[in-house]
Image (tube, rainbow, N blue to C red; front, side, top):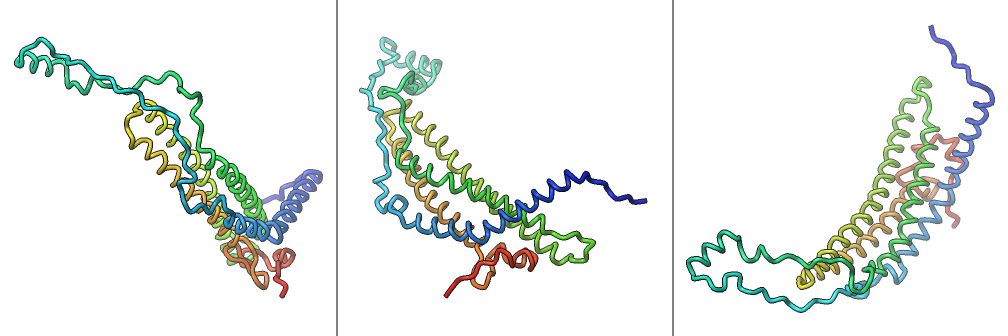
Length: 263
């Protein structure tokens, strides 16, 4: 025997106020914030800082000098050829005696990051965080709009659940961009440590510049992807949206936040 749940009137009032606040905020995001952010990112993609043609301009100097080579003495002086061969087999290969340079402190102080990329990353990271936060608000809004299945609107429920899944995908992709930035710093730090330990190996130094160039290209792609995500979330002509779409919202609720172009 079913019974109705009794909710305290004060709590119910607060919950209703929360729903109204989320609805108003999400409608403003779809109608105003997303279109403006789309245009901002499109303008950002045209700025000189993200359109460097000659990638040598983003390289940073690695101030680790190459020390003078150390000549190893012959470990088998005074031994005849037969005994020297036997001693060599017992002691292992001479190359096993060679280890990297022990690093206690950096000669020039702390090894700095690539300043050009750090400046660009500090501009891109807030944009990633903003997309995640605003997308989460819209996702909550759509979830509040999902009608109960017993109301008979099963088709509307499936469409809105599909939209929620799309919004989760946008959030996940944006979060992966932050992971990518963290992996860049970790990878570069390991390579710089290798350079400090093996300063004579040029390939480590070249690999650092290659990683810097790769990260710069990746950051430009990230900004482009962020802009494209806002394109999907922004209403188009006649109030229709790409990706999010009026299909995800009830006609009554979406009519409030409909955004039309003026001609």
